[in-house]
Amino acid sequence: MTGMAIHAKGLEKRFGRNPALRGIDLSIPGGSRVALLGPNGAGKSTLLRLVAGLSRPTSGHLSIAGLGAGKPAARQKVGLIAHETFLYPHLTARENLLFAGRLLGVPELGARVDKLLEEADLRHVANRTAGSFSRGMAQRLSIARALVHDPAVLLLDEPFSGLDGRASAKLAERLSELRQDDRTLLIVTHDLSRVAQVADSALILLNGRIAREIRGAALTSESLETLYAESTEGSP
Amino acid sequence: MRVLAAVLWKDLVSEWRSRERVVAMLVFSLLVVVVFHFALPGGATARNASQAPGLLWVAYVFAALLGLNRAFSIELENDAISVLALAPVDRGWVFLGKFLANFLILGAVQIVVAVVFAVFFQLDFSGIVPQFAGIVALGSAGLCSVGTFFSAMAVRTRFREVMLPLLMIPPLLPVLAAAVEATVGLFTEGKVPPGSLQLLLVADGIYCIASFILFDYVLDG
Image (cartoon, rainbow over all chains, first blue to last red; front, side):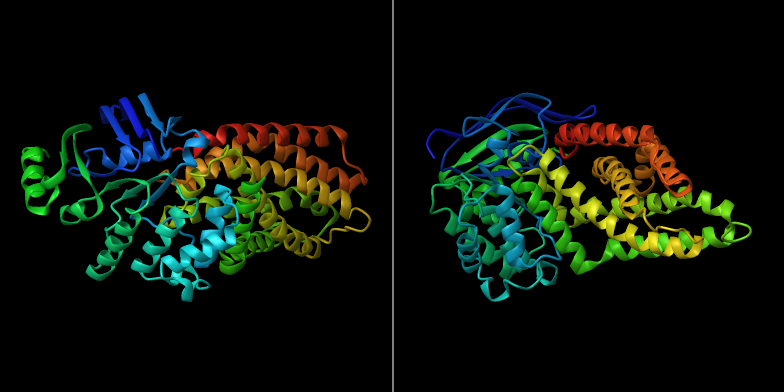
């Protein structure tokens, strides 16, 4: 993707009287991999839900690939993976992907679903209901679901949450594979040790504002932990 | 249409495999029928037979409340409701898919309840099955359009089991009044009052169109 994948100007979101985002200005070029960091309540998940089109901003401007966020055409550009898997437990793995693909109008859906099941190493359990899956398998299926329409922007909200070490490593490996294509990734995570593996830059959010941007060598685990501690010092 | 068909397919397949809603709705509404049978003095008299259509609709409303309460709570498991909200179309199509699924599931329960009701209250359906089915379909369309809309609203509230009836019953009063009047007319005089049919059609139309338009805001998190 060329141009800006995500562009926000003066973005604000309030829940009643409580501000969650206080004037976010953000430009993420197409093909970037950005980690969103910050303590609980900083506004990371709120920002991700606005970008996904699951929630409307209170004020400000937000566009996805030049399309107004929340509009049907902009939702088509976005895939979302969260710690909740968004899977239907009574549908099989294949049926969950078919359902997502039908909602998104994916052409040649059968072949696409087969390919995604293969990539997720779930082909052998394609006809098992998702409710019988382990957390790691469900998360891999959730990634396949989010990729079914080959979205230009992939949003990940704490994807490592609840995974054991082995499943986390497998997920990180899968996310590294996704770095090889020209997709924009925006990842919310508390796991600083994974950031360098999955992102090229990081933004630290604090009290609904972007407090710091970190790039390059500073993304290594030790430097990042120091910078993160400096940025969030004194925050609740 | 693609989204409508996908949501309808997903809801029916999920219900077929779990049978959570149908079984609960069926058992509960049959218990209601049994309670009515024993609560009314004199059992199945002619007077009770004229009251029976009203009682039948009470059983239908209870069944609908139970089923509609579950209609969106199944979407909250794993936060699957987000998949519906992410669909890149007007979310009114998601409403229509859920509405149709609820309508069909409620319809399956209504058929069984009507048969049991006919046995308990000695209702004679001979020669009026098509008209009866038409009235039930129109009344259920109103129930399911209002119910599907408010079920999606109530599902994220803390007291959703209480919220749904509180939100749903008041706007449904015209639909229920017209459906009961039409059913009583059919059983007692063999014909349906045209006024009640017109009211059912108008109410169904208004509720379906309003829900289709407003559903976009209901799915916003």
